[in-house]
Length: 384
Image (cartoon, rainbow, N blue to C red):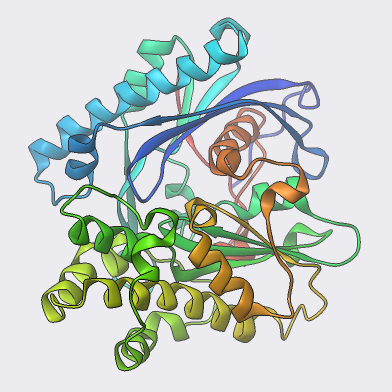
C-alpha cells in the first residue's frame, strides 16, 4: 500500500496540542507544541504545558471494570475533560484555537492486548474525539496505536519517535527511561532504524495500587517515597515477581494494566495484608530490579558506551525510587530528563502533538524496531 505523500509545505511550522491520560489515570496532560519539518528534519518546541487533575471518583471509575454502557458513557465524559485541558493550555499560552493545526489525543488506555498475549491482538483507547472536536472547534487526530497493531506490531511504545526527534545525539547513544505506570526505555542514536525500545515492566502501577490500599484511598501514589521507605523488601516475594515470564521476553514487547494493575495488586494485598509497608518496599524493588535487568540483558550488550540514562515520568518524583535506581545502575549515570533542557512532565503529551503533526503531512511515525510492526505506517485517525 502506497503511503500518502507529504504536503508541499511540510517544512512550515505547525502548532499542535497533544493530550493524554496516563496509565495512573490521575490527570490530563496537555502540551502545546510548535513542530517544524518532518521525519529526519522534524523539530519540536514546547510552547505551553498544563496538567489538569481528574476528580478522584472519575479516576476510580477509569481503573474499574467496565460494561458496554459504562464504557460508552466514560468515553464521552473523559472527552469533556480532554477538551477542557486543550482549551486551558491554549489560554495559558494566549494562543487562539484558529492558530492551531490539530489536536493529537491519545486518550485513556482501557485495554492493551499485544501480540503474544492473545490470538487476535488489539488495543483500546477512549476519550471520544468527536466531542473534543466539537468543544474546541479543532480537528482531532486520535487512535494512534491501532494502525501499528494492524501492521503486526504492539502499538507500543510510541515514545521512541519523540525520543529520536528530540534527544538523539551525534555520537554516543542515549537511553530515555520513562517511569509511568509502566516503565519503558528507548535507546536512540543518529539513525531511527537503529532505535531499540521496549516496555521493561512495572513503573509506578503496582506502587500506586498498593498506596491506595495502604492509605484507604487518601493517597494515589507513594508520595515522596514515604510509604516504601517504612518497609523492608521481602526477598522471596521479590524473586517470585521477577520470575514473571514477561520479563524474560526479548524486545519488541509491551505490557499494561492487565498484567501489572489491580489484579496483581489485589493478589499481593490479600496474601500479606499485615505487611503493607513491606509490600510497598518490595514493589519499589520490583520496579528497580526489572528496569536494571532489562538494561543489562537487552541494552548494554549492544550499547555499552551509553552516555547516560535520562529519566522522565511520575517515578522521577519519588526520591526513594530514584535513589535505588541510581545505585542499582552504577556506574551508568542516571539523570533527570530536565538536564537535556526539556521538562519531563510535558514529554508524553508533546509526543501526541508531534504525532498529530506527522499525521497531517502523511509521515509514518511508528518505529518498527521498537513495536515489531512489519513496516512503517502513518499513525492516527482524523476527526475533522
